[in-house]
Length: 168
Ligand SMILES: [Zn+2]
Image (cartoon, rainbow, N blue to C red):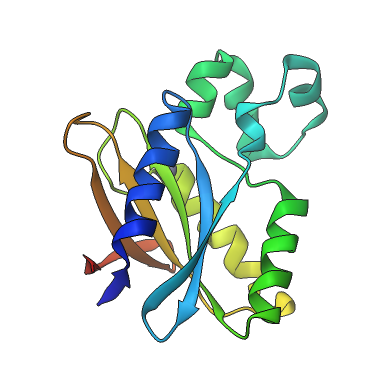
């Protein structure tokens, strides 16, 4: 069971709504299985223009170049590395742990996409070197605008397993 306090839960949904139709992203930290801090992180894919995107040459971005910026942000996110490292520093200073990454799906269900699983596995490859605990992946879906859905997953060996999440 992964526990997210009501105020953080609501802020994650506000964050998702504020960026729709683009995806938002962020980090959750705390102790045991209870979240105590939320970090909104800039989705750099939602901000890149064509020229900037052309400088990216990772295979995972090649398909994205063919999409309009709105469509691109809707299906993918990449966290701003500097904000991510600032959040990680704050997490260390507070003596809490990184627990999860979150992002929104504005038109699809709260399930990891193929891209989400690829990104999670890429993170797993460098996680040991960063000396970080294995994070959960939380998805906020706005597919049904009036009824946002939040689900958490553990992603291992390219497979996503749902972890129960409770608002408290
Ligand atoms: Zn996703």
